[in-house]
Length: 234
Length: 234
DNA sequence: TAAAATATTCGTTTATAGACGAAAAATAAA
DNA sequence: TTTATTTTTCGTCTATAAACGAATATTTTA
Image (cartoon, rainbow over all chains, first blue to last red; front, top):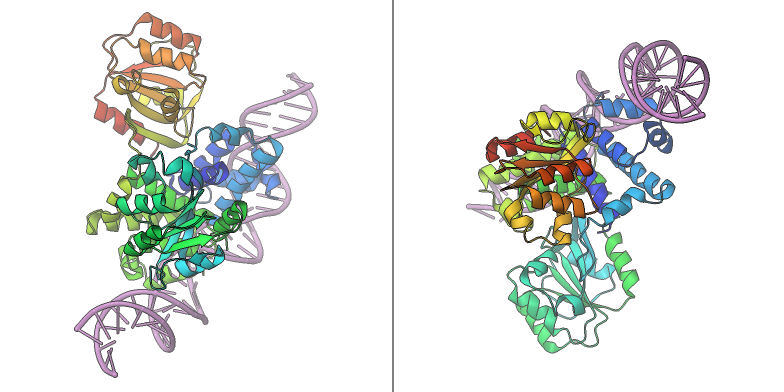
């Protein structure tokens, strides 16, 4: 989850739940050091519209409006201020050492659809866990993660949902990740190996015992990341 | 920030920014294992209303609607399901060892107002930093935090905003916190000492050099926490 | 201090949200 | 398989959001 998405989500959540949403919009506009006029111009609105929102004249702005305002704040900062504020926040987001990408999907994605979209081949047998759905994914650098991980860090792989796909990169035989999955009380919905050297039959056996589909995909990592993210954007 | 607020904010943010907000509402309703009918009854609405939202008939639901839906999901889980889902998420929120409470204010609060509301006495001189505003607070267990902290953990005290009040508890002379503040590149807007034993004059000097008001308050800790939280609720 | 820039207020119009309820369809339970 | 429950669809009405623009007020800048 990159800083833009994380910050957008934080702002959206805060505005929506605020006892005074207008003032929250104003707070964040001030954080970005953007005038009402500039924000209005960017959104191709009249400045009085922004003033009406911030003053609370609109008691229940629609979420598409909130989304547009936040998008504008971020875009102005990024495109016209060199990302000055975004950069300040970047240092606040923990970069979790072994997590290459993590995302919560805004809606459930059936496992079959998921596997198809990432050009995955299922190693486990046909009936294993394919009726479930996925609510997010984590791309894991196996070398960094599996070999050095403790239980607190492992739990972070699950983000906000355990109903997710764990995508392991840097796999040679694929035993260690499946052992880690088997030992931990919380189970992912799907395990994906990205371009493994080979897959030991033990890994497949462990996956089947857990009723977790074990999937292999060989598309390039950047493309895989894009496809994973795009699944939540349709 | 307790789990209810954190989860509410996460859900609100996700719904607002989702390409298909209706489906996101549905995802979370399913996460909580609540039927449309139960949700509708709880909100004293017709079930067809929930169906219309989830199907996307309403393209831009108002934030007060989103807020009510999320509030209902959480309340049903808490009051009728024993907090089953909330408890699942509790283990996901890192309890930061030395942080007793942390919150982002949904709007800027002038420093003067802030100090007054917590029954604070300013130790630094009149002109120091009182024209600024506060966008959040962190209540810190000094004994745990200051004496064992490293720079990564210290940065976490600032949450999403550096324009905040750091409230240190368990103070004897008050030198260590001010030294930490002075040494770190990022500065809080206000430093509050809760029921210090005494305050060394060095601490006051350091605060004045940083142009940070140093404030003392002696109200009970639970009451202080309540007042701090209430400041964001008016 | 004057001028420029920014922000506010509020009347108004159009589009859409918020909500209901009836009928039909889908799903779950017995 | 039947029955009960849940969900969906959609027409409809009322309230409010979304947006404009004019006039005024406030703040910032030179």
